[in-house]
Structures are given as structure tokens and as C-alpha cells.
Image (cartoon, rainbow, N blue to C red; front, side, top):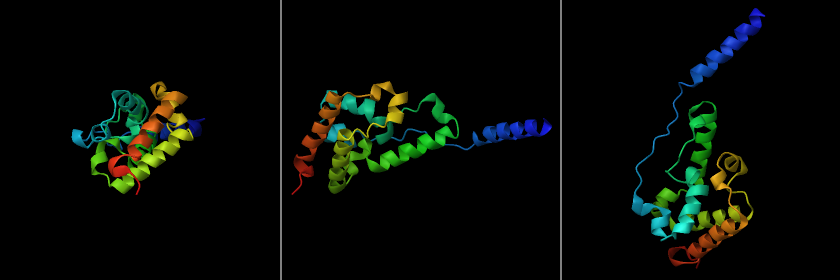
Length: 155
């Protein structure tokens, strides 16, 4: 019994100590003119859909849930957000190379059409991100429109 209590004590101590490992959840300043919705003159309905379904991971405007400060959950969430931002960041759109923008838009269209985004694990904890087929189509069609216009148009 003493050995069991010792093991439990070490587990609790370890859990407590890992809480001291900091995770950067600070909000970086955003150049409003560089944001996707400004650069692409995005309609309000689309902006609202993007904010509810994409921005928590794919922008610098992340709203962390309360449990996101508890390690090791915080490490997983932070890793997902870093990966998502590397794939597409709506906050730094103007600074992104046009070729990369085209690739990002096509990937977003594909992810919406094959229903791989938003991720079901995210939707389970964020019901506002649970978009229906019509909303999914609206977003995909908007991305197609952006892809086919201006600097994004394939030559």
C-alpha cells in the first residue's frame, strides 16, 4: 500500500511540476490591413463563418479555452495551432507569397469538400464550428472565387 501511495504521490508531483512549463498564449499584434478579410474584401457572412470555424487555429486571433492552460493538454493544443498556422494564417495573408496563397486556398477548398476541416475533435468542443453542408459549400465557393480572381488566378 505504501508503494502504491508513493507512486500516486510522484504522479501528482509530476503533474504539478509540468504546470510550471510555460506555453505562449499571448496575442501578437495584428496588422489589420494584412488580414484575409481586408485584403480579399470578404463579405460579412463569410467573415463570420471564418471566425467561427477557422480563426481559432488558422489566425493570430486564437481564443484559448480554459482547459488550454493545463499541461499536457496545453502542449497538444499549442502544437495543433502552430501546425495550423503554418498551413494557413488568415492574419498574415498580405505577407504571404501569391503562389503559396493559391496553394492554401486550394487546400482549404479540398478540406471543406472532403469534410476534413474543421476537425471533428475541434467541433466537439466548439459547437459554433459545426457548419452545415450549405455553409461548407458557401465557404468553398468563396475560396474558389478568390482563387479565380486577381493575383490568385492561375495562368
